[in-house]
Amino acid sequence: MERVLPGQSGEDDRIVLGLLNSVEDGATSQRRIAAELGIALGLVNAYLKRCVTKGLIKVSEAPARRYAYYLTPKGFTEKSRLTVEYLSSSFSFFRQAKSDCADVFRIAQARNFHNIVLVGKSDLAEIGILSAADSGVSIVAVLDDGADGSEIIGKEIVSSYDELTTAFDAVVITDLRRARQFFDDAVTRFGAQRVLAPRLLGLNVSGVEASKS
Image 1 (cartoon, helix red, strand yellow):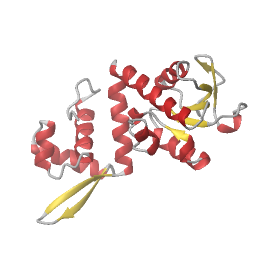
Image 2 (tube, helix red, strand yellow):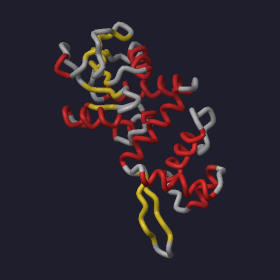
Image 3 (tube, helix red, strand yellow):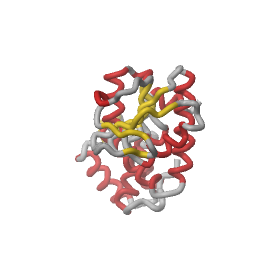
Image 4 (cartoon, one colour):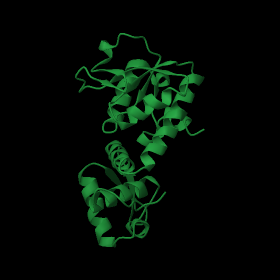
């Protein structure tokens, strides 16, 4: 995976995203992280401390006076947010989102899910609605807690599951900011098999992993 991503909203976000990617990929030394990111060792140390303070990374002492770095759940969420911000600022977001939505809808069909609720009003939701037309599934509504009675590409936007008036088989997460929060809530409500998410959200869940196959 490329560590240094051009076009990031700022140098700070670029370094943090690269650092989180390196740690997730198993980087075990600050020197290795510095080499992967192409930045000074002292800067890596400063950013690691900041990420630890923010609760994004956990540090454990390893043998021979070394340290092991791990992403916390908060770190995974932040990595996903920064990745989506990068993708959404480039044309690659549309290409990947369209491909991921097609993969997710194929999984839905394989599980005999035909009526889908999208969770999260976003560019990803719009791409999902357009992709569904070619995938043999139907989007019954979009759920968003900021709903104001409006529509998105002809689909009703509701603020809660209780407002849904049409039966549905599964939920697909399309929120770009709070994907993990909405995913966990949907799994609690409906069970893991009925909740899917596009790969680009980086949730590392069974539904997402399945979309790679």
